[in-house]
Image (tube, rainbow, N blue to C red; front, side, top):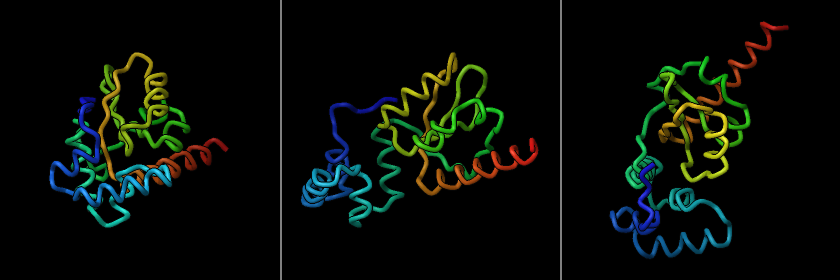
Length: 155
């Protein structure tokens, strides 16, 4: 992840002209009070669309933006990772080439999720891709159905 450490997300968004200085100031006040993620606040406040924010996050962190609807999910890869990683951290493994594993995330700053991913990846090199909340919700819905079907076949 080639995060531009010297530039905070808010500064990046204002620098790109995606939100105004006043909107950033208001969003930071809300963030101080609620501890919500800045990106969620600027979208919820209507300062920027979720799609534009995703593109900005992709550029800011140097992480490719993908659509899970356009990707085939390799369930044999998914099942090698814990439900905690997938459901709680929303880190969704989608493919592996035996050397690396590609994992879709909605929050590339989830330090605990990244730690857990590295633990569970064993010798595989994690490659992070960014996805929308909607894509992740759909993938998790498919994951739950897949697990439910597997349990039904066992019982």
